[in-house]
Amino acid sequence: MTEQNLRAAKQVVHGALWLGLATAMSKLIGTLQKIPLQNIGGDGVFGIYNAVYPFYVLLTAIATAGIPIAVSRLVADCEAVGDQLGSRHIIRASALLMGTTGIAGWILMYSGAELIAGWIDNLHTIEAIKASSYALLVVPLAAVLRGYDQGKGRTTLSAISQVAEQVVRVAVMITLLLIFTGQQAADDVIAAGATFGSFAGGLCGLVLLVVVRGVELRNERRQALTASVVSCEEKPAVLDTHVGLIPAVHSSSGNINALAVASGEQEDWRNHGAERAEGLASPSRESNPSFGTWMKRMAWTALPICLGAIVVPVVNVVDVFTVPRLLNAEGYTGTAAMIQYGLYSRALPLTQLVTMVAGSLAVGLVPALAEAKRKGSMREQAKLIKGAMRAALIIGAAATVGLVVLTRPINIALYMDNRAELAFALVSSTALAGVLQVVSATLLQGIGALRAPAVHLLAAAGAKIGLNIVLVPMFGIEGAALSALVSLTLAAALNVRSLARHGGVAPAAWAAGIARLALALFVMGAVAGLSAAAVAQGIGGGRLAALAATAIGVPLGALVFGALAVMLGLVQPQELAAVPRIGTRLAALAERRKR
Image (cartoon, rainbow, N blue to C red; front, side, top):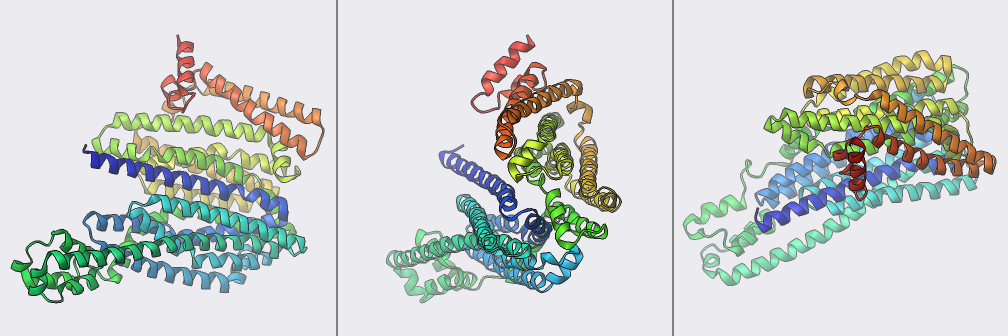
């Protein structure tokens, strides 16, 4: 590999790392922001927000999912052949397409707020729906510019804009929460202020991208002007022979053709003369497609990605459109139903955080799986799948046991009381199924089985609807939590079956040693639970005691489980060696234990 290629490869890896970290950080901020939302606004506001936000996420996914990737791919193709005119056509066409889509989505969501609230069966959500609709005016355009920057290889700006968007969104949300709660506003007004943060964050990200894009265009014009002057000085004969050629080329395709002339790439102008000039000044439809053609290309490129991206929001929307309605049918008033829905949603940020971390780790295996499949190396593919699913099992099981055992102190520490403890524990118990589902879905995509995860999640959504209808009237929000556990387990089981069929790795290959895992989990749970109880007993009741119990129980339980995992051989030395800094020492310890 040449030095130039090596430098380019390093830049790609560096950019991908920045983008991955930014995505993880933005997801983390977006997940944890629900805790101050509940603390400041209360369970009623929390319930309204959680009833509206999944629907907004669904519409945003429909409007934007796949567009950054589609724009990135098309721009990268143009950049590879030096077609900057094509890149500019792509960004203009995609901005027109997404701008129109965003405006249409805003109109439908804002004007249809009462209709949507009727679907949810709670009129307290109307103002929050209207407030969240404004984000559709800016988020799609920001997605276009991020895709353009990624296609140009500038992932750092895209990463910074993502983090800035989330930070501003949370800052505006908390500010409006404090203002409206200080004014003792109604819950629906406070929730509307919280959802309006999505527009503020999206606007910040868009402004940042537009400003940088404006600076880039000014630099491009300056470079084009300089290149034109240089070409006039170096090639007077060409200009004498073809008067007005350079202005015509520049006006049609920006600076790229002027630069080509200036650098000598268009070296045989005398021979090709007017024919060459005509080809550059008036590009053919094949070399420079129309806006309509670019829109069609983007739509067809983004469609399969979009279909995969909206599946998870669809599953979340199932609860939005069923649980409040079923609670109303059981005699809860509109406000009481939203309070119950807020209580049901308490553990969701924690389980989403666990699945997000596991999913981020699994995404890194997708290129390796695709390469193994391309080479026909089934052994390497099976090794990667086995290791990933085993890690998912261990991480998901440990997180589930930890969250369930420490339900009481965590609930009080985060939300100031221990209401809906059983629902919190049941939702927490979905962490294992969620991790297995996310990791197995990622692995299926890596080996080319793209449809299976989407079909399985849709089946899970159907099961969730049926179970909600049966269980919520019987058990309330605990029934909704139980149906979430069953439906996610169904999705994970279907993925595992497909993984065995398409990837050639049966569950027995990665679930070996289940008795040792159960022993480690039991000891971990006992140590974490007893230590947390002892700390809380020593300090007394209240939130401070719960915070101290959580701060002691979580790391102590993790330490005990890690030690047992090594002692019982749940993890192998080569797997531990991959852990940064302490991995080598852990691997050496595990190796000595085996001897």
